[in-house]
Length: 190
Image (cartoon, one colour):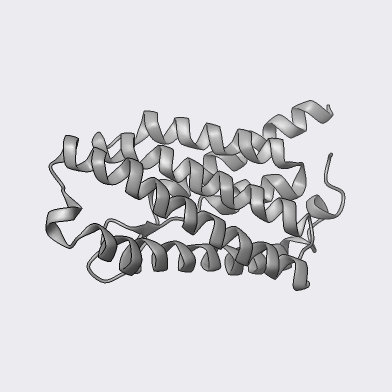
């Protein structure tokens, strides 16, 4: 029964994460409409809090496969999805290692800030070595010629990822503040 319940939670959280990845996206950096925040990390983090880090990774993987199957946008998905998986996976991992399963307080904030910084550094590197060259080659979108790599990384990628990480942390704090009063979070099946 315990495994069935766990699988049901994983299926539901993966489905919710997929919907949150596809639909409510919004840009936050003027001039960079392609950099959009999506909230699929929240169900992934809830999976971590209810179960463990391994479950969070499973939800991340299922969410990503569903995105690929349901909402594949060609080059944008093929380049962006691996980056998104790395960003979300890194955010969840760093948060879990630093904050553990604290529902708030100093550890929670430090975990969120460190996870945001780690995600930002990874995304700057991934953009420089992976995304910029691939978008130039396969999509004809050469950021070097449009605004320059340095300006793009410092004025768009860096603030976007820092703000995104802090929005993730704030949203998670709000949701966990409500959720910790629910029976599922008090007696989570581990």
